[in-house]
Length: 160
Image (cartoon, rainbow, N blue to C red):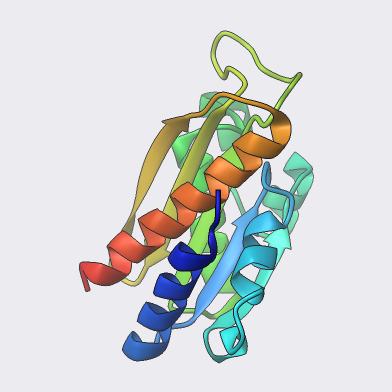
């Protein structure tokens, strides 16, 4: 599975529109930032990112409300949205993108099974969040998550 065409499309969109991007990743462990920065010229729009793997990093650095970690939980739409907003605020970017999920093979539960991922995009005046349920190996779930995040970001950019 090649991410290059999707990455290039999002890169082109960000440059044409003139928006900046910041990331807050958890289950992807920096793979999204690596994918974005693999495109030459990404410094024109990519400000920075945080790999907020431990819940306390989400609270301390991204200002995610600690109550959200308990209910609805670390892997939830609310936390993904808060991470996206936190990255946007921290890096003073036009767009923030947050990803939280369970890449596996362990760590899943009936409430949050392995492969459950939430991706959120924050922008001035709102944002959006989607839930995904992927299957496969840990590496595959991470790649699928990055691909879904790029597609989602491309959709947001295409919508203006």
